[in-house]
Length: 114
Image (cartoon, rainbow, N blue to C red; front, side, top):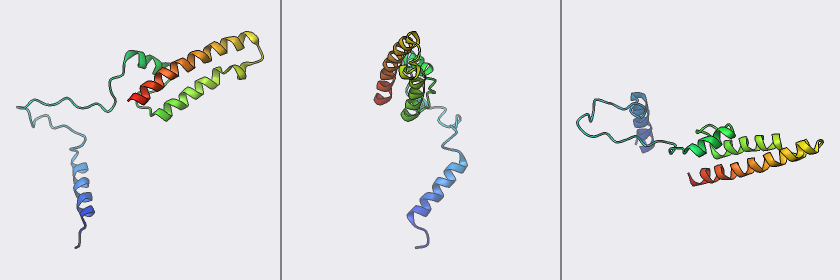
């Protein structure tokens, strides 16, 4: 038993990767048959979610944890405790923090559903 099943599988996978069949679609083959739509890796993003992603400076390819880091970054910037010297600024930052939390809740719901 010179080659194990895993060795053969590895060889097949290497050949497939080198040939590019995983990355290119042959447009000439199946020209007579109806081609299926490619399945997107990321579901279509609604305009409202796109706006929230822009608000938090989140790319559509970000994972939940990466998005959460952006949320914390924005929250820290406008947190009332870090701007407590001036009462007017503290009030504004408190309102901004409420807005950030509300927006994050909506975006977080989208992330957990997808």
